[in-house]
Length: 416
Ligand SMILES: *Cc1c(COP(=O)(O)O)cnc(C)c1O
Picture 1: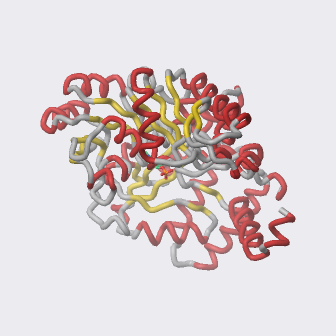
Picture 2 (picture 1 turned 90 degrees about the vertical axis):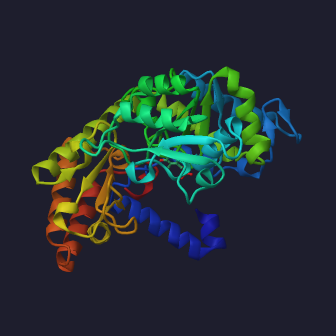
């Protein structure tokens, strides 16, 4: 980064510091990962200079000889990897992808039914503070009060009551696999479009470690930077019959020029995700999340639903009386980065709720296996015992830093 160093030493130094932070800490934020150097190079390329409103072969500006090939490759690779009929790789990120999908199928005031935000759903699934809750009549379904899993009879009841035009499945904080077939049947019964937002688990789907929603959903949205390990971006996969509506909704409906550098990086991501190594990665992510769950359970932790079958887990700290915000901040000082999170039926406020969320995507990318996850679980338990012991937190951070040295992270090989 010599040019950056010369032009802007301040930003250069901050990026270097962030590289060090990402290398030296155990990153458990469930939506984060380490993109490869190849993905980072595509993202940082001159493709950022191009304007290409429209789609390959149908652009509004000239000079698309190369960009058309880049976007066509990205689309073809996504189609192949997910067995999708139609793909749009232009959404700027996960939230705009969801809004574009709504724009394709809904009018303002139409009803959408999604998982409640405090139960693991995403803001864009109809939360009152989101555009999705303000421009549409947003209804929500909850998890079962006992099992904290989805009760599909209850989801069906909600759908029959509110008759949504669009039913959304998908989440940011639910540790269990969804039954897409049951969702499909509910959508059919009430005549709703069935949308799946696989932002969190699309990498597991790509690697065969989670069932695919593609055969069941009318439309599937996903980010590309979470379990898929690509650039900041998103995509929409849909049936051919909705191709024109989706493309029109993304551009010109919601966006202007696509981010061609991101499109190129998405193409690279899809090539990586189609390899046997990625398949192995996706399965290891699930094994690692389960290994962390097993360690925490053995240490007496309570986990929402009792465990996990995807990449994430949600610990319920309510019985300890501890502030999960204080726990998350102490863990960060000890070199373990995660987020405090609302749990279903939380009695505390969302800014200081009862849960902490952990994901295995990033640490698995740097080569952690079950044994390393046990180390992580033990450190988390130890820190929670000594939240106010700053010397212990500092000692743990140093130990974590040493531990991490043995596992060079993708994109940060130059630090190893
Ligand atoms: C992360 C996430 C999004 C939003 O993605 P951004 O890129 O942050 O806008 C949408 N839906 C779900 C389920 C997510 O987890």
